[in-house]
Length: 303
Image (spheres, rainbow, N blue to C red):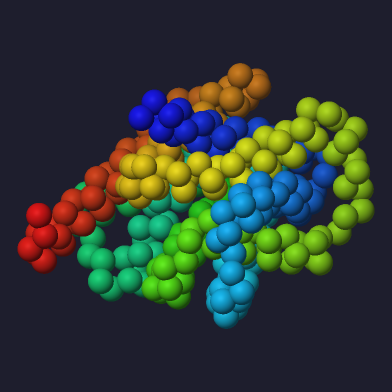
């Protein structure tokens, strides 16, 4: 059990530190190039473990169109939008916005999966989450806003597309009971091919002019923040279940904000309030979803 708690803490740390690595890299290369390197170095450990475990089979190739959709939207576009948003925002703010994934996942589930009904806690979580986002976007400041709103839009686009991808997986891939590791490997591998084809690699070597940025992208963002994070998350799914495993999203915004503060980024009262609201939103959504599952089980006569 001690190993499980260590894995849980590592997952939150890996996810939360991704934003400072992207911020460093954005000073040297483009967001598209950051995405290409992230997916490349993230794919390596996934492919190695998938090969060792033998989870990739020829029969899975019939799902290639669905894998490609997930590769383009939930990997290539998602990671690009996160990199673009982080390049425009303080890394801590980007991390807080990145923590709103469960908000958009819940919205997408309620809109597109008619079998799942919202309860009062889930609706409260959605409203509180959007209140936190508004505090960060600061529309009340008008043209003099101190935050880059395009960066906010990129971050919210990323979390929204990931929320929609959850629904897509539920509808088209979950019924086939594919091993999660196989899905992640197909997804990142195809995304790597797409990104390699469309990314302008001119000046990519510039990342090596700053060793801390190069190591941050390769090891921190790629190997640990993407590849190992996938593997740890699937381990936690097996040990704790989906609801408990997703609790790592509570740690991510806090880690990102603390690292940003340590790196010299200004953190004001609004940012702290926004973080508290988004964390409260995540908590309400998770508790509400858990209660909804319990009620559904009781209605079916399950113990």
